[in-house]
Image (cartoon, rainbow, N blue to C red; front, top):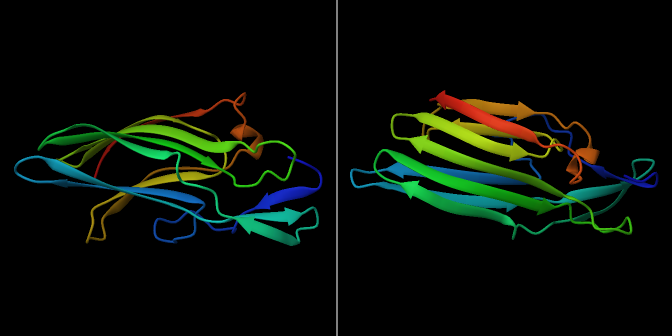
Length: 168
């Protein structure tokens, strides 16, 4: 973004259970004989700023106030919800407001194990999405997308489409 400073990551690889992330959203759907229930958790971690030589300068934890869960239709066979994710980087060291990391996903979980996801996402940073059955070893990778460059955070850059239809 500038020739003086740069953002740094933690050089992690994709992993469902690694626990190192900038932002993370987790939803869980439980089906009962009378309907379904959704729980929602969100978490943001620190963003680090480095000088042009890679020396650590400081870190900041951005807000999670613009990561929003919206419950849609739900019954004993399906549960639909939308996640709007708009998380800032956390620094304004460049003389302008830094862009945020955005995605919007409409997710339908069916009692029979089918999952559909549709929406759009920024092409930076790296994104990943997993589905799992709690208290089991059953999980699947829905997608992994590598960072195409932080210029893709700016509103003029194209977003990528998400379209997933699978079954656990």
